[in-house]
Picture (spheres, helix red, strand yellow):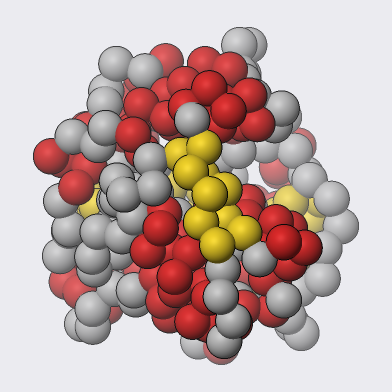
Length: 279
């Protein structure tokens, strides 16, 4: 049996579907009740309370571990999740980490994630670590403004990074959960091309079949908007990355192709599949 955390998100949903279609017994975990595919068990649990995961982990052999931001808050102990998994008989953990542990390792959250990576490697469990860069699905931040005003408002309109499709992350995670050959692998996951916010707006327009205007925000305007939904420190950190990506953040990784045997999906593909969110 395979346990999937973050089951309601952009990665957890397609990962659960892929595992179920592969004939695997799957248990999904999320903080709130959620619809799951036929034959999939769902358990409501909070990753901030590792002991509460025992019902989900009972009988599990593999775990996909996706940690939400609040699990890294002061007083949280995400390493206890790995200890709980090992105590429950789990033998393999696929951890969703972040590319930032190597591109910008000094941030507090990335220090915590790197410590978790190190703990997993030393746990005695079989492990795989996935390090994605920026997500294509972050464009959903623009969905309301596109629906109502056919406008994308973002800073640094002509500065790009190779954003990765969450469906590709899910496909890689499924492969790593199902194939022992990936044990001990560390995969950096990016899209196949560097794309700017202006380029993303153009791809959304193409998917809609109607024009979308791009409005460039100042850094201050963007920070004020972002700080309404995330800590100001994280907003500043994000703006540093998207405004001035370093060479490691601009690198297009071959790892999606290496694992899946096909290229990573471009942003235009993600936009076409998710166009309903922008209509």
